[in-house]
Length: 184
Image (cartoon, rainbow, N blue to C red; front, side, top):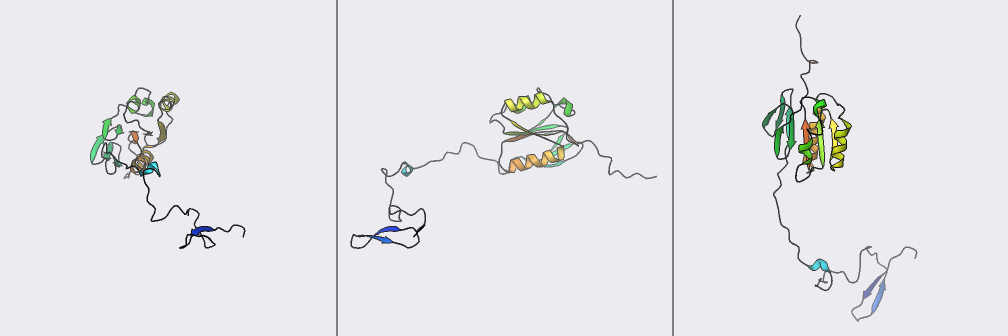
């Protein structure tokens, strides 16, 4: 009888019977379809109400494409580096990854509600960001993901689709000469 479960059941004559039929682990003689909770049974009996403070955007801001000139963000053409702070899209006054300073990221940590993660796109390739900038953002409670711009766009779109509170600082990649056709 090791591991066997028994259920105590009340017979029609008021006697308690021991039954050896299989019993789910959550079974209880007190839980049945006929049992109704009353205010004395449980504090969960109280009614719950929900207030919608702000309607959510359907999918959030999405970056549809990028080029050496800028970005297409939800149909808006943005030229040059930009800061994507849903629902706003701003020009970002940086020329290259070297211009990403504590001052240039200050707009990201002043936001309310506070962003969870900042995605930085550094152009055509991944570049190192000044450690003091990363330390400042960490101190402010903002996680930072530094990537090349194509991957940063994809990461931002993924985080937004997951309804994360994310922002992006993006530098367009320069014109690539790898696919240029030259005639001789």
